[in-house]
Length: 139
Length: 205
Image (cartoon, rainbow over all chains, first blue to last red; front, side):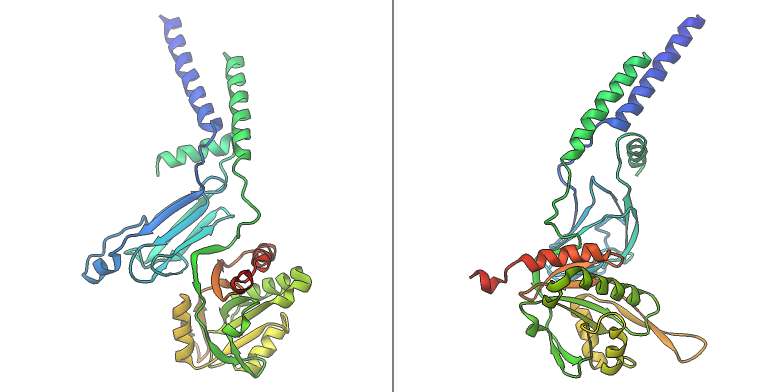
């Protein structure tokens, strides 16, 4: 009986270790380092009619070396203060990040007028990647 | 079991290291924020620290580094200008093709003479521009620059909170890039060098 429990515990332990190793070392699939956000056409008109719908997340998560290019596209008919700058209709703005930190930007596309970009350190194989993957599960 | 796990981890780390090599960035890419497609930089003609009128569109053929600030700025502007002074040094002889222009957000105190004196602390080649408060406000809006005056409670002095980034304008007068505050002089040099290598649209025709 005791040996059966011990064996089960060993199997569970083994599965946890393998899962942790997979999370820590399995390669990241990087199709593009761009994280693209768009202001849809008609956003300004909606705002003017009193509908302050939030079209972008208040916090955007990026990671160095994986997804560290923030791309902001203005598909609306009017210029938008989007992130740190003025983006004209039809224009996009690509901002690369090279430092892990939290960045606060004014943004007229947000109902709150504020946008936060959280840039994580590069999830290098091992402990950093494990931490990063677990953090992302809860975001 | 332990041996098996270690072998497994070793294989996975080998795969991941190989995969990591495929995500290196190109050195030809700008390190600053990039506009696509770029628009023409809003033109202006303002009184300059050289006691002449400075017109942006007359700078075609040069790279213009456009910043916004004021000479009484306690921290952001001195850091930005020191960075740009270092950038000028890094560029060497190519600096002749680059013009730093600092547009004041405080026209009350920043006269052409005051701007000349202030900017000379960093590099005498830098040009400061000023004008009527309404004209400067309209220009800031066209560039997406925010500036807000805040009067100190204990007296008549004030400071101006303002956007802390700078713009890079290419030889054709296109607003190409936005350099966030804190970028190193090496990164700015890198980006200016890329823009300097580009031919103007007129030359390409």
